[in-house]
Image (cartoon, rainbow, N blue to C red; front, side):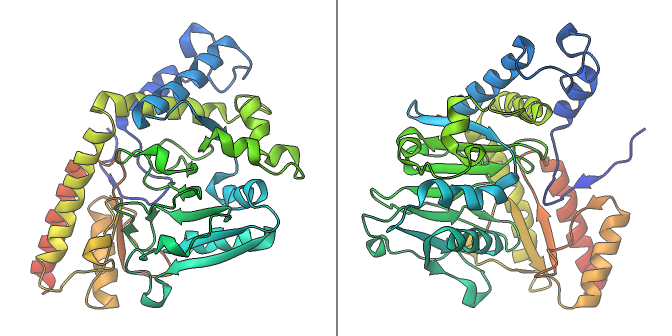
Length: 362
């Protein structure tokens, strides 16, 4: 019998149990091919059906219009920090970055190496407790793009609505909250997301890019770093991460079976409310890092009255099967990452533990 754990890891993170069981069942003989999906040629018809279904499901679940291209890339979201300015930031243009945490800082730093980039808004001076307010009138029509990180795993904040950047493309790193809610894709010029939180295991990065941006991209960069290269080859310019894309497809099937993005959003709200209520009703025993209007439905971050209690909380939680509740090393405290595949049952159990721990240690 397998050990009972509640997986709150920030990434790689929980995957739906049924998805794992399907992968286990098909691992050594995929669709009667006599081979694992990991052994199939990426040019074979058997693998191509997986590749195309993954794109079709993503298109359906996010309602992606025809004038957008889906790419399956490698290098994680971190490579996109460089690829975006390399492809889209031209000489004489400026890229604007909205700073809401460590990942937007890293994206901004990479853009500065490529061309002119500026900080349009930031909440760093308040330790990233909220999403920055942004005045779109500060954007010039000639700007290359505006970049934001939609969910901030370390600080537990999330954009609840997205700014109108008019004719300037809005680019979003959605690695930690893609497919956690319905999206108006047409608000964005480009969306990118590492898969290892809501879409599947690590190894594949999804890029959703408007086709007119592909036509405008720079051409004086290495071939493999050009979006157009991968768009023309249907993400098969070189060997793609086939197993990660297979798992992505299976997760997308699972999301469809749950009722799609709206049903997933309802579940995520229910899970987040369970934990935020425990924090808000604790009379200060638990303190949330994020301001209420900026709270993430993906990462619930909180602290206890002192370091000794925090250590005791994490040790007792681990003994009871709660995995991954330690806060990021840069901020400390605690963090419950409650991505799509984390069941309501896990959040209910964590809330009960939080209440019992408070009663015992108050």
